[in-house]
Length: 275
Image (tube, rainbow, N blue to C red):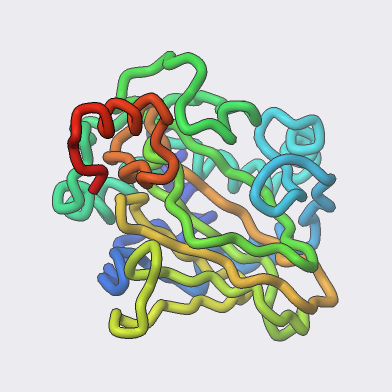
C-alpha cells in the first residue's frame, strides 16, 4: 500500500468525506448528522478542552498556534487525527467535488480546478482582518483553519458573511441542545442580509452531537446564531475554514452611510446622486 493510499484510508476512518446531497435553500449547503467516526467522536467529546477567554466570535477559543491547542494535539491522538484530516489535500479534494458547481454559479473569482493544500497558519491578528497583512501563497494554494470554540451564556452572532477569502465554512457540533438545556444557540441560514416576511423562511439548525453543516462562503451565504439565554453547559463546536490568501468572492457594497466623507463631498460637489 502506498503512503498516499494509506493516508487516504486513515482520513476515511476519521470523517465521512463522501459527496452529500446539496441543499439549495436558502443557499447551497450540506448537512450530515454522523460526520465523525463514532468512537473517535466520543474521544473528542471526552477530551474537549476548556477554551480560555480570547479573541474570536464566541470569546472562548483555541486556534492553531496557541499553546493550549498545540498541547491538545500532542496529548490527544483523536484531536491530532482530526487535525490531520482537515489539513490535507484529501479534504480540499472533497470540497472541490462537493462544491465546484456552486463556485462557478456563484461567481468565484479564481480558478480552483487545480486547488492545492498548503500548511499555512493564519494568526489571530489576520483572523480578525478582512485581508491578510502579507500574501505568501498563490490564489489556488488553499489552507485550512480548524478552530475550537465554546459558546457561553449570552453568545450570539448577527447576520453576517464570512471573510471573502474563505472558500468554505464548516461547523461540527460536539454538544446537544437538549442535553445542555439550551435556549437559543441555533444556527440560522438566511436568504438575505435583512430577511423580510415575504421571503423564504430561514433554515434553523439546532446543535446536536456529531452534526456537520458546511457551505461555500458565497456573497449570499448569510448566517447567524441566536443568543444563548440559558444553558447548563457550553456550546462546544469546531469551525473549519478552507481559505485562499486573496478574496475569492466580491465584497459587499459599502453602505452609503459608511462611505468616506471625502467621497460624499465629491459626489455632492459634482451634483451626482448618492443613490
